[in-house]
Amino acid sequence: MLNNLQPGQSVGHQTVDNFFVISRGTVGLNSSGYSDVLTYTSPTVASAVNASIAIQTISSLNGVVQNAPAGQTIGNVDFFGSTTNGLAYAANIDVNALGAWTPTSTPTQLVLNATASGSTIPVPALLTGTLATVSAGNIYGKLTVAAVATVGAATLTAAQLVGGVILRSGSTAAYTDTTDTAANIVAAIQGCQIGTAFQLRITNTVAFIDTIAAGAGVTLAGTTAIAASTYRDFVGVVTNVVTPAVTLTGTGSGTL
Image (cartoon, rainbow, N blue to C red; front, side, top):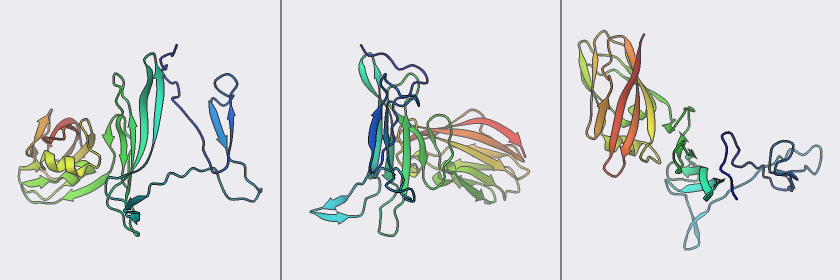
C-alpha cells in the first residue's frame, strides 16, 4: 500500500553527472537522507571537471537545425510523489526560450512550478527573466523600476505594472492614472495562466492624491488611491487568459 507524503517529506533528489556511480541506501534512505546518489569521480586530483548534467533540445526543419522559437521549452525536470491513489505530479522546473533565439542572443526564462495546499496542479511559483525575486505563492518575479513623470493623467503600461515598482512624479494637482488593459498585462507576462500574480508598489512623490482607474478588463479591489507623498502596495492576479481579466487589489500603504 502506498502512503501519502507527510509535510516536509522530500519528493525526490538526485545529483547527476557525466561519469557516475549509483549508490542506494539499504533501507530507503542513506545516512545523508538521499534515496539515490549519482557521484562523479575525477580522473585526476588536478581535474577541474565537476559533476554535471546536460539537457539539450535541437530544433530542426527537414533535417536542418533551426533557431529555437520564442516560447519553446528547452528542457524540463518533473517531480512525482506518492498518494494512496498512486503517483501525483508534484512540481517541475521548465526552461523556456523567452524570445526567438539567434546565434548571438538566447534569452531564457526559468519557470518553477509547485502545487499549493488543496490542489493537485502545479502552477508557476517563480518566473525569472534576467532579474528575479523569490516570493511566497504564485508570483511573477521579474522586477524593474519605472519612473513616470507625466503631468496629470497617465496610462500605467503593462510593462510598468508587472515590473513591480512605479515612481510617480510630475503632477501639480490631483490626478488620475489608468492601468493598461488586461489583454496587454497578460501579454506582458511570459507563460501567463489563470492564477499568475504580480506584486506592485506605486510611490506618489508629489503633494497631490493619485487616483487609480481600471483599464479594460481590469477590476480594482480594496483601497487603491495613493495619498500625497505615500506609497501603496498592490497584488495583481490574472483571472482569465482567454478573455483577459486581471484583478488589482490594494494591500497596504506607507509614508515616504
